[in-house]
Length: 389
Image (cartoon, rainbow, N blue to C red; front, side, top):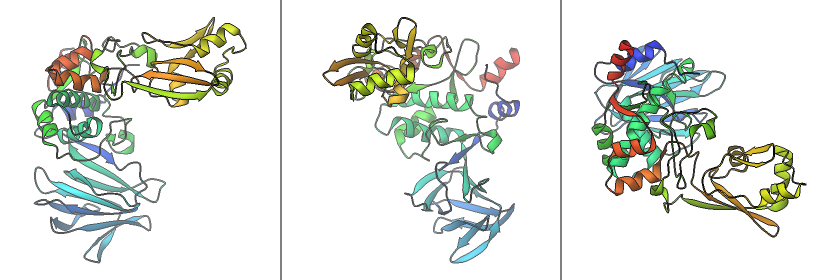
């Protein structure tokens, strides 16, 4: 089924004035009942309770928010400012930074930028926090979360473009829940604001650039840690082909940190798993040999015997293996999985892209190596092409 982006999202993203702001649910894995909010140095925020301003907060001040009696309590200097069903904390400048220190449950301090909405979580005695953040600031945070802090600028540029493309392609994912995206990996990992200068510069230098296919649609800008020397076809993992997500020989990933791995398992456990979960005929001598002596010079999709096919992607998921690109050998009562790569194998290999950048390839080279027949354009051009279409 073709992805359809609601019209109001297209209008929002392609007809903006200055900054584009998106709503990202943060700390979404927590049932949060209490936290401290404080502006970073030089920042100022106005606090609104149920639509009315209740306090202006400066960088030397801290406000506490508690979930009590199915309401949001706001406290400052030991004084309760009231009970509210909705609290908004809005920046009084173009770019402000704030800190969140969770106290129930307790977590380390995190930094975010721009604005914050605190709402009551439906059917749960806890908060829902939504960071209303500038798109490019969000992208910078995603790049740090997904790619780390110590890589080449050209790799960061490629990662930023892919993160931007992916975010815009799934922007309506949580609209029914009142926000655009969340901070978990099924959207994109987002840990808050980054202060990493190379990442900030990479995002700034690629601002607005996205990747589209030959029909001018945003691509599925997926990526993984290491391909093991060969990326995968989209159809081999998802069952549906994408013309730009084709397998490529990836020598850049070889001998990188996540290039190879090993896992051991009792032989009987392995054979029992195949029999019970996949009805593989382990009593058959030929099938048993195949199960205990499986190899992949190039990526395969199945372990198979006659009409029985066991999908490698299922084995990876069931046994929590790092990839589907593995071989199997038997050693007495033990089988050994010797694998290559880490992740689903589709799209950009992050470690391969890092190596390409170190060798002098540009971010354009990186993207065209891993995604075939694509174009890099300014996202503002998408409105023009959609109108023409």
